[in-house]
Length: 622
Image (cartoon, rainbow, N blue to C red; front, side, top):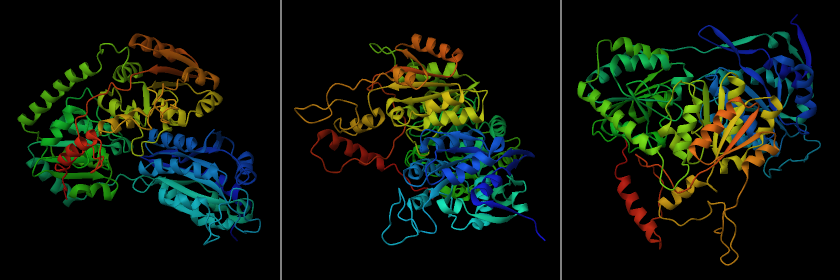
C-alpha cells in the first residue's frame, strides 16, 4: 500500500518547493530559495497561510512593495547565481498578477528562471464574477493570468489539487534547464488552493535536477576548427552564456593561447577582463570604437553564448567583410544557428576547452594581432578624453561612470538596465572582475535597477552593490528602498537626474524631431505644451523619507567623497547627481530606428536621407 499525505494544495506546493535542488559540477544548490509575495484575497488564505504554517527557513517569505519589483529581484538573484537557483513570486489575481507580467517578460527574454504563482478566479465558478475578475465574453475559462502565456516558457492552471503532481515536476524541469529556462507560471484558483488531496508521500522527497555540460559533436567541431584555422581576422563575441556556464577562465585560456580578440555584449561584460590583451570591450550600438572597427573587418565571427540582438549586430550592419562567416556556440540550438553559423550546440565551457585543445599551436596572423593592439591603444586614448572634464560642465554622466567604476572595484557589482546609462556604461566600464557588471538589456526594463540590486545582494551578500539609474527609471519603481531597509540590506543607489527620459529625448532630437513628451517640464498655458521650466524633484529627500541616507554630488570630487561615505554608511544610501541632458557620448555603430519617410520638418527629412543610406549596409548573413 502506497503511503499518502493529506494536505491542501497550497501546503503541498510549499512542501514540494522545499525539496527542489539543482546540481552542476557535483555541487547542489537550492532551486527555489524563498517566496516573494504580496497577498490579496486570491492567495492570502491559501498559499499565504500555507507559507506561514509550513514555509519556515527552508522556504522563507520576503515582502515586496510592488509585484513587478519582486520578479525583478528574483531574476537578478538568478542571474547572479548563474541560473543555479531562483525565487517564487506570488500575488493575488487581478492587478497584482498583471503587475508581474512585465517581470515575466524580463525573465524569459533574458533566459533566466523565475517561478510565478498568481492566484486565480474560482475553479468552481460559483461566486463569479469575483472581486477583480475580468469577464472574458467568449469563455468562462479565461482570466487575466492567460496574459502570462506569451511571456512564459511554461504555463499551467491548477483546476484540481492533484494536478500539481504532473504540473510541478515539469515546471521545475523547465526552470532548471539552461536551454529552456525563463518565466514559469502556475496559476492557482482561489478555491483549489484550499482543497485537500491524499498526495503520494514520495512526491515530497528530495529531487535534484542535474545541469549537464554537453560537448559539441565531432563533425561540427571539426568544421568550426577548420574555419578558424583558415580565418585571417577572427573575432569572438562573448555574451551572457559565458557567465551562466562559468566559462570565464576557459575563454581567457582560449584568447591567450590563440590571440583571437574578444568583444563583449551587455550580458557578456566581464566575460573577459579589460586588462586582457585580447579584450576589445563592448561591441555594437553601445560598443567601443576598437571592437566595432575590428568587427567591420572580421572574416569570421564566433558567437559565444549570445543571442545576437540588434544592438550587438548594429541591426545587421556591423559585419561588412564580403565573405564573413559565423560559428555559434550556445546551449540553445536556435541561437547557435543564427546568421547561418556552424552550430556548436552545448555547454560554453566544455566547447571552449574543446576548441582550445583542437587549436593547440595555432595563433591569429601577426597583422591581425597588431591591429588589435593599435585599436586598444586608440580606444584607451579616446576613453580618457570622454571621461575628462568638459568646459562649463561641472559633472558629466561619463565622469559619473568613471568615478563609480573606481569605487566599485573588483569587490562590487554595478547594476543598470535602461535609458541612456546602458549606452555609456557599456562603452566606458572597465571590468576588474567577472562579477562587477550586471546589465538587464534584453528587455531594458525601467524600474529594474533597485529591485534587481536587492536580488544581487541576496545572492551575494559580501558584494558592494550599486544601483545606477536615471530619474525616469527611479520614479517608475523606487519602492523597494523600503524593502531593503526592512531586510537590513546594504545598497548604494547612484541617481543621475537630467529632468526626463533623456535617452529617448536624445534619440528623438537626433532623428530630426523637436522635443516632445520626453522632458519633465511644466505645462505652459499659452501653448498647452509641456515646455515650461523643469520639474524639480529632490530625490535625496525622497529617499530619506523611505528610510535611506541621502547624499548630493555636483562635481567629480563631491561624487568621490559621497561614494567613499556610502561605503561605510549603514543601510541604503542614495547619491543624487545632476548632469546635463545634452552632453552625450558618440556612437560607433548604427541602430535601425525608422524615421518618417514624409515630413514637413527639415530635420526629419535630413534624418530620413541618412537613414536610407544606412540601411544599405544591412546584410542578410544566412
